[in-house]
Image 1 (cartoon, rainbow, N blue to C red):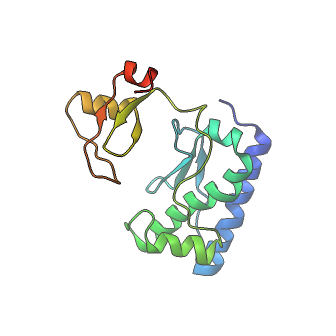
Image 2 (tube, rainbow, N blue to C red):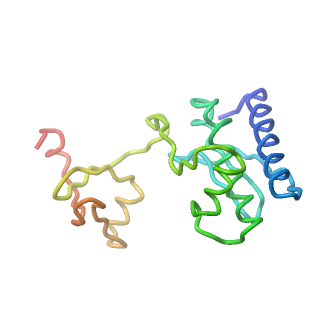
Length: 171
């Protein structure tokens, strides 16, 4: 998917605004991170620390332009700034939250709430004792190949695949 040039300019402007905030607050200069549009799937963006690069999901970007400018850019830049200042720390730990809250003045949200229907691949329905779960094809294949088991974060029981007939018939 091709990202329109005017949208790229908006992202670059947002990046410069937040970069300047970090430079003033931390009294140092940072190179401008490279922007790339190579993320697929449900992820909005990723920060590549050693490459000093921010990769964005072009489909979700087109569908959520303002949110990317106001939320995703500072979120991913905060990862780079945190790495530069503190080294390897928890991805959304206290250092990252400090950059988001005190320097960027943004809520330190760790997940986006974008509609992912346009980017979500096939899912498989699994059941625990308290609810159903939708697993991606990647996670489903790991279960099939006996590489891993998934458990519900609420009840703790192992997830079991529901066969398609049960789902179709509402059982």
